[in-house]
Image (tube, rainbow, N blue to C red):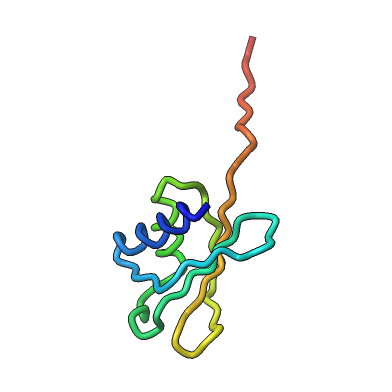
Length: 95
């Protein structure tokens, strides 16, 4: 799963969103990642922009909260979840 973390960091950087670190949350049932952004460089950053960038990477569907968290004075943090859709869409067939 380290490859996904690297792809997330590199993909955000390519989209113009500098990400300081990508950390996988340990012992979670679903795959959660903590992203940290420098608060000085990210004044115009929104969670919707991060969500659009992540979902355009082709890794899977990311669930992003609506607000950033502040775990320290210098960084904005965002805990995201990678949720793969396992159910298929059911289309009724008319016969």
